[in-house]
Length: 402
Ligand SMILES: Cc1ncc(COP(=O)(O)O)c(C=O)c1O
View 1: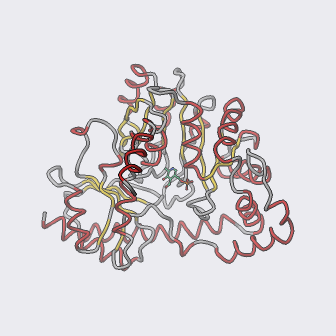
View 2: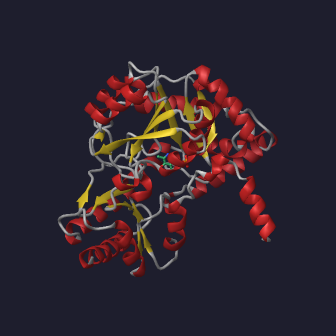
View 3: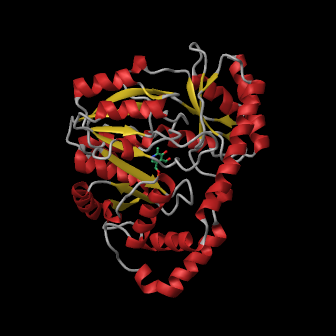
């Protein structure tokens, strides 16, 4: 690029985009994706579990039976058959009665976050976000330049005192939560914690977003009550096919009240007219022809074993002063090193030994000096049990040498 181009581009960028940081994880993934690296860094599902053959059959069937329609423009709300399937799933799995009219199909749940930001947030509007929280949500909301407040999460869920104080003092418009097997920590909100959160939010005007891409991936323990049951008038639910079937189709959804669905549809039309209709048709065909519960059970069994392998290796090798947050499902474990040890320094050492993970720092919002340096996220789903053992042993050696 010429100097003129560089200068012009810099001057032309909106204030909005200038304030959004580049995803730190993408930078890390560049180094950790080398074939000889044992990577606990990615947030990707295990590709060995993609139902390739069944998707191939569904694809052929869609083209043979309904090719003209499947390749045509389609409705912004999303395919009605797919929305009906999602509504029925909420009924059978969670006992929730949801109308397909209240479901909007999005380009992954990532787009749901962007559309909610677009439709609900003005500059400086107060919002509350988990600390640590999902980086993609922080990035998506940042583009609308809200004032972000954080509420700490631990193994029980949200810090109730912090939330109560925040709701009272800052009156957040939105409260963003991932109550099941949270990204990055793998923790879930306890039943009691959910009830306490709902009691605090109920008298306020805040909307609570329950983002739930991992909820069906439970290895142990019992499912907890959905916020939609506890706080029906204020809850917006997000869902996704990414972690239970495939992320490449970019299929997610929003469940929202009718008067919010309408502006969301307008924002969706402005963004992309509609979600890829071919992939909606293929996934619906796949869901109609295949027992998805069996497929999800297979993922749970596989990931459950990998998590067990990681926990066993951690118990065997990690120094005893490294804390691992209790997790009953999903894809991640969250480790806390002793306070004087930096996860960034550990990353530099570990990558030299060909082991990668994500340091916890980028998942936090708030003043720099309040952000802990000693946390890290470990994904267990993409490596074999043997590699998990080797990688954790290497990581422990690096921790011990620090
Ligand atoms: C908590 C959370 N929300 C949303 C997403 C985005 O998922 P999707 O593939 O549906 O856009 C992710 C992806 O990792 C996630 O962890």
